Length: 115
Image (cartoon, rainbow, N blue to C red):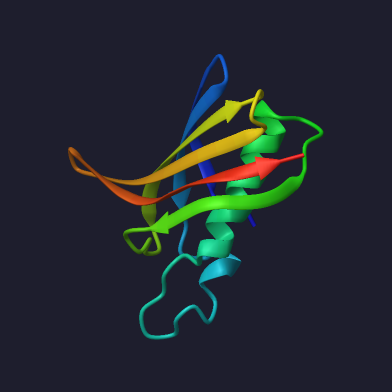
């Protein structure tokens, strides 16, 4: 289940997406009942969906080289996802940022090797 895409900016080997994280998304069910947050596996799923679909067609997941979760993503958040593709290294770098009124907080980041 994907978020609502609000904006897309494609530049060379990178794309920046603005995503609305609706509270009704499947990912929030049971994670966690009293304080729902977007699971890391959902964030990685979306990185693969958009990264392969937009920047690296035909590529597949090989390994996670580095990942850091800095800030939980609550329901009804507005996220910015920045993806950078390095074809020479076959590496997809990502960064999620929580967007607020004039603020931006890093939510997660990492690098994924594709093959």
